[in-house]
Amino acid sequence: MARIEHKAARKKSQPEHLPFTKVNYQILAVGLIVIALGYYALSQEPWDGTMPLVVAPILLVLGYCVIIPVGILYRKKQEAEKAEPATEPPRTQ
Image (cartoon, rainbow, N blue to C red; front, side):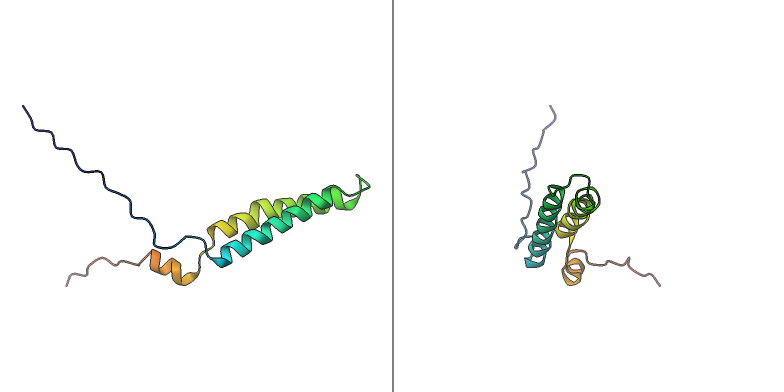
């Protein structure tokens, strides 16, 4: 019979530091503040005024669709270069 060898399960290496930095948390905090301002503008009287109909949706879309994703995806340029080193194919002469 054929011998079946089981390969040992490899553990994924965990990063030495957290992926979020202080700047990421600051951007996320700004996003949460913008979202809170959007909901506050949405609750203003009169219900058919400029704040609830124009300003609030702009703030909410800006917070949810722009600032929060930027806060999650932002990385300093130096860290991005370390994480993705540029490899060149070997040159033959």
